[in-house]
Image (tube, rainbow, N blue to C red; front, side):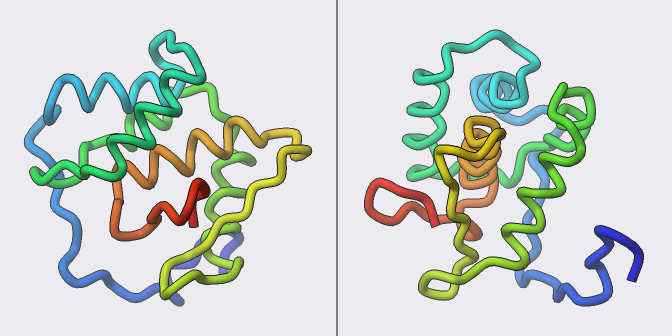
Length: 133
């Protein structure tokens, strides 16, 4: 396996998520851009909005967010850590579980990524109690 290439060991999701039309809902797109540091946002307000929106997922499909992620200032090592934690850590009721420590140097950014992924893929990350699993 190539480093960070888990393609050979992953299975396809059924049904596969469908992408929204071009830009999707402008408000949802704006939330994604704020989560990726492409637009200014108050951290607490953004995190609360992502939590609320992840509990009432969009129905039009997954927003096209990868290009925005590439443009963001989030370092590749942080994306790699989020990916590795999703793939390698424990599960909670059949869903990947991501445990975040407040003392981690990238705790805020990782939490933002987790909330963004829960918003984009609500069947992958689901809230449990006041935490995300």
